[in-house]
Amino acid sequence: MPFQHFSLKAGCNAIDAGTVLANINEGHAGAAPDLGPFEQGEALPAYGPRNREYIFSDGFETP
Image 1: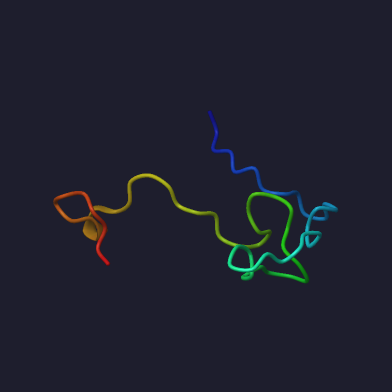
Image 2 (image 1 turned 45 degrees about the vertical axis):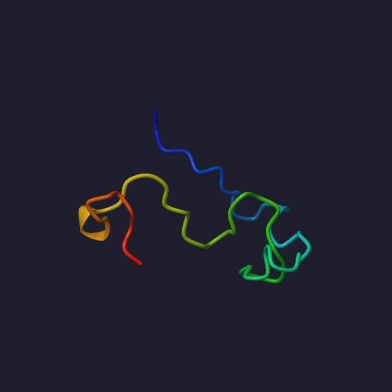
C-alpha cells in the first residue's frame, strides 16, 4: 500500500480557513491555520523508527 498523508490539496478552500487557538496552532504558515491535519507546505511529522545514530541502545532518542 502506498504512503498516505491526508494533506489538503493545493487550492482547497480549507487552506488558511481556520482560527488560531492559543498554544495549539499558533505556528501556522500562511494567513491562518489550515483545517486539515497538517499545515500546507510544512514538513510531515516523522513517526516510527529513525536512523540508528540517533537512538541509544535502550531505544530512547538522543536529546
